[in-house]
Image (cartoon, rainbow, N blue to C red; front, side, top):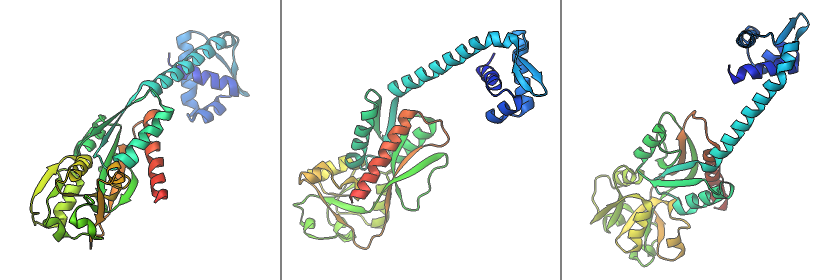
Length: 302
């Protein structure tokens, strides 16, 4: 016996017609009729009286109808309880390349927590390829990754553009370069450069920008946050999307500033990604919506 068989019987009883029940349930009438007959054979009673004018509940069916309704009500309560438990206890895992952590990720998680006070959110820093793999395999629910305008989106992933910015040079306010309104590639070659490791979009961007030329000295690090800390400690400059620098606490506190690059029209996109066509749990959808809402607020604020 299957739950949908009981649901079909209830629909036929409520609508008084196999045809109308089939239309509401989006089934063919022969398929619905066969399903009901299978249930009748299993129970050993005729639940319906079939007439030219329609189908009505038989006497035996009327006796069993309260039990059918009770079973369906119990199933509804079970589904509701399971959904609530799923909403409350689920852990949502977010992979991020650490771009826009302060102006976007942290406020979005804070907004999400207002509606999901006991749902755990695990934020994992990783490279873009690792995030894509984990999304495809179900290890992450959501991913925040950078794309350069024109990059292809991996098949099987659904992407939402959150922010669109431009690369900027992140430096200390007391750096001699801070007196300029914009910086050139030559400026990057003449000062220690803190670059993202291979596998990050900004590594690919800087490699293309320098066109095979090497800076006077360079460091490599994982992610924007560590890069900004190294700049704040005076180790050099780094190139990041402007949306990962604007309104950063280090900028607000006067430890960092940033300048645009001359003669460069590149656009960097911050994308929110998840696996395509999966049933989306409520907590994941709500956190997704919190990211989108926070990104819109940032854009409108600019």
